Image 1: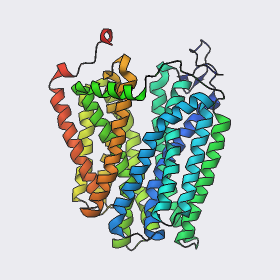
Image 2 (image 1 turned 90 degrees about the horizontal axis):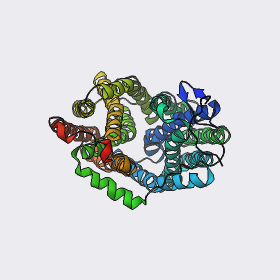
Image 3 (image 1 turned 135 degrees about the vertical axis):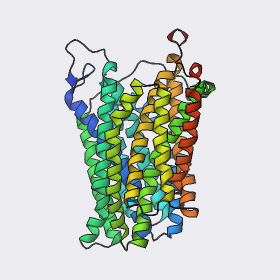
Image 4 (image 1 turned 90 degrees about the vertical axis):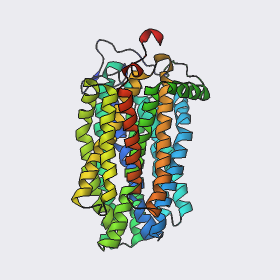
Amino acid sequence: MTTQANPLPGAVRFLGLTLHDGVHRNHMLTFYLACYAAIMLATFVPQTQPFLLAEVLHLDPSKQGVVSGNLNFWGEIVIIVTVGLWGSLSDRIGRRAVTSMGFLLIAGGIFMYGFARDISGLLLGRVIYSAGIAAISTMIITLMADYVCNPSRGKATGFLGIMNGLGAMTAALFLLKLPAMFKDSGMDAEGAAFATYASMAAFTLCLGAAMFFGLRRGVTHSGEHNPPMLQQLREGIAEARRPVIALAYAASFVARGNLAVVGTFFTLWAALYGTSELGLTTAESISKGGIILAISYTASLLSAPVFGIMSDRINRVTALAISLLVGAVGYGSTYFLDDPFGLPAICSLILIGMAEVGCIITSGVLIAEQAPDRLRGSVVGVFTLTGAIGILIASVVGGYLFDHWMQTGPFVFFGLIAAVVMVWALILRSKPHLICPVPATNQ
């Protein structure tokens, strides 16, 4: 059994990070490979899905928004239900086993996408894939705590953000081109779909093997007693009586919902516009949209340090309000757009990319500052839960608005929500006595 020890004077260091005893550089390299791969695979499936809906399943364009939203909805339900199970299982069989199992499930779900010829097949593949995503997401958080000493976790999280950004850019610049590449080689739509998803499934299996051989062996126990889940939920909800905690919960709703809107609906918008207005195939439209997404992800990557520094230099509610303002402008401006490939759309996506990472960083820093020590786990749990609810609402409402109102409807909807939460933040900012952190003596 491997135990989590305090760092010794001669503890191993990696990129300036102080590692726990027994953790080596190869473990950290494998960990950051998992961070890179997790976001790459998490964006790959929803962003290539319009190709399947249009060219393989031949689904009517007027129904694709709702179907995409529903698939995302049920995938998120699976994630919510299974994250706690993966955490408990990792305490029994080890982190590397659960991480490897997660990549195995993702590979299975992706492979089933290549075979799917109806919505039921897509749903089954999405459920398996989402269970794997839940495992990887849970293990990344857990491995960070297992591997890196507390004083280095801020910097370690920064590196994690960089790897996430690079993974998302890889998906946008390369993986979204795969259907078009296989079609250009002479395959029909079904053959291109199978080749795309089968090749990614094989690659994901290789990643799973890398996790098994590269992560630290053994079982790590934190030694902490975690209260029952329902008790944590009650405690976290009760803390929402403090206005600033309630604000942080609302900000988490916006931050996670933002990710769902872009990941699910931008490539769908690009696919429908490219085929109806530009005479492109769905595969070509998705590939073209990938370039726009890459610009948005680059904006996220470059602006992340700015929001991090800003959160440390100014009032944290003010920092959150600024990120929400950027989101409200970026998302709201899509109301005036028809062309997802034009310069105005690029400008909107740059602001959206900045708002995504800005809202995640500023809301995370705010909840870390405001959560009482003795209830930190409960508060962070509800903070995460409200983010998951944001994804669910973005998926269902966004899908309906996409099909029945306008194709930028999901973006406009979240722009309005960001504006409301921004006003809320500004009102609290004018009442400093409501946003002071709980004194340590009271925790």
